[in-house]
Length: 378
Image (spheres, rainbow, N blue to C red):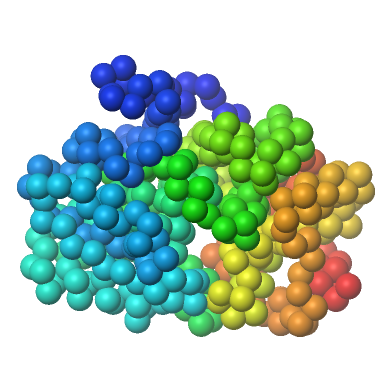
């Protein structure tokens, strides 16, 4: 995977009224390329949305019952002059399913939305995934914009075009790759995020350091207290650096045929936890955090990383306020059963994202399955 390049991140254009406070990152995918705007108070910025939505176009804002009272009116004002409707979904991973997803189409069809409409996802990862999948499906594809309001969605799920819903037998097994017109990451929206959700987002931030960015991992070790304490400068840097890292991977491998699978570090274990515990019991970032610790421990047992490296990883995840162990209520056999229903399974072989060092991850099926079973049992 390519190292993050400074060229991916550029200042916003001088003509934009927000000035130098906004950063702009380009996700380079040829004709499907799009910008990520990162800054404060962007949700109310009409000029920004005017760049990507037709002046008198139809807009459906997909949000949830938690985010709507905070930001829906502000966004609607920024979209002024257009026909704007809202689909307000229940809040929680347990509602990321086909039944709730179908309600988005009810709003689109009831209001006779045309193929020239735009869907705007206002919320966290669940809202973004469901709205993006609806955009990919409605009339075989309409424009959509991501407006992520959680740390996890700003650094991960809003970028890269993965959309979808869960099934009782597996997480994110139904969906599509479908790129947005742009991502609008308003750092100010993190002010209304509760501590548990903030920590969940930090799991995905830590992931980028472990995959390919050891300098960022070092920075996180030195600045985790500031991130947990909601220092605005530290959070802005972490969001930008995470987006730089992810944009580089997505540009290389849009549809996860190779390097992009590295972004799933901790996710095969984590998705098994989410499914096994019941969607919503563990937040996605909490499950990924435990999953990364499991991946580190298994990498150590394979002789690939040192015990000291495992200690550093576990300590940083603990400092972020995240779990470092899998739940005791899921047996080793159940774990293996759940992990077998994973998108990284190929030709019947389970593949895992493991580590040869901090910042040196790999996707592999070359490991001792008996050692995996033993680890899951302890």
